[in-house]
Amino acid sequence: MFEALKPQPADKILSLMEAYRADPRDGKIDLGVGVYKNPQGVTPIMRAVKAAEQRIWEQQETKAYTGLAGDPAYGDAMIALVLADAVPRDQVAAVATPGGTGAVRQAFEMIQRANPQARIFVSDPTWPNHLSILKYLKIETVPYRYFDAETGGVDFNGMMADLDGLRAGDVVLLHGCCHNPTGANLTMPEWQAVVEKLNAVGATPMIDIAYQGFGDGLDADAAATRMVAASVPECLIAASCSKNFGIYRERTGLLMAVGQDRSRHGVTQGMLAFLNRQNFSFPPDHGARVVATILGDEALRADWAAELEEMRLNMLRLREQLAGELRTLSGSDRFGFLAQHRGMFSRLGTTPEKVEALRRDHGVYMVGDSRMNIAGLNADSVPILARAIIDAGV
Ligand code: PLP
Image (cartoon, rainbow, N blue to C red):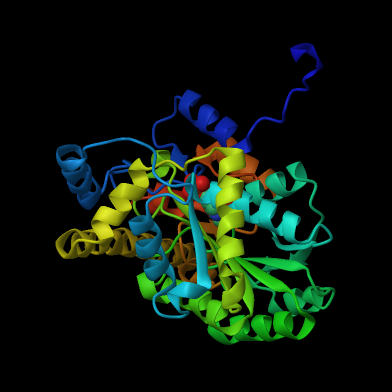
């Protein structure tokens, strides 16, 4: 049987990690894999996470199954974190999932069951796993223009023109904040224009929010998601706790289905639980319990928010430093977009050949589409990167 299996393409980011590890050069810079790193290059366990884990270790009396939707305290806490009071709680169906990826996957499956004809509009570019899962599920995708390589910002006119192709029943996948891989984000008036278009045609938004707290702050980063949830008849929201709680390997996510028709709430909730049951039964609990413990305790929550804010400000400082160095070296403002971008990533907007030259000649490792993980830098490596970018002729 196994001889019939075809080899799958190697994961580009994992191959990049291996090449980085094998590179003997001092001063090499890893801007590849998407995890936050502190200035010492470490992905830390947050203080509040350690404290919550200790509390759970001391107080937890059973590891019997939870429910198919996961720990209700986790669901309630995450709905409040993402949506605040944008929509009444009884309009939100939700299930815990294995990471944000699990939420994305379950959302796609839910769309497929609700409307097998639905096409999903995706930003060009988007997180590659969106495309990979959609292809795996055989869901038709339609790309919409998003990134303007000239300005480093959003090609909003192109995006809106492409969304003119929407039909009733289609879904538009949007990144709630900190767009991956570009770092370029819609303004609030642009979000509002998108919502008006979707409502006019009868299309449904699906929001993937994986970096709340990494861009402009916990509430600012959720503002667009809250506005959308409050302004449309239905939407899907996939949230991840991997980055903002630093619990990548605990696989902690939440899928929310928001619907104004309260009479459908029970059926929607039941469908989400059913999908969990079919795919993995009960969602992982440890990370979810850590998150619920932190969000439910005033002191832990304050400490978590403060540490998250330090991480956010560290990335912002690195962005400003890099844009400043490049301004000096290039004698122009053409890299100013790096300071405007938000989140962990920025797309430099250069060719695969120059990305390769940066790796070969300067030991700078970024993804082939020129996505850089800003958190892979520190105050010492920023000038080295800036010099390499100019020397490579970007
Ligand atoms: N969505 C986007 C846009 C992401 O960048 C990521 C992680 O890289 C995820 C979802 C899911 O992350 P995880 O499954 O690790 O929670």
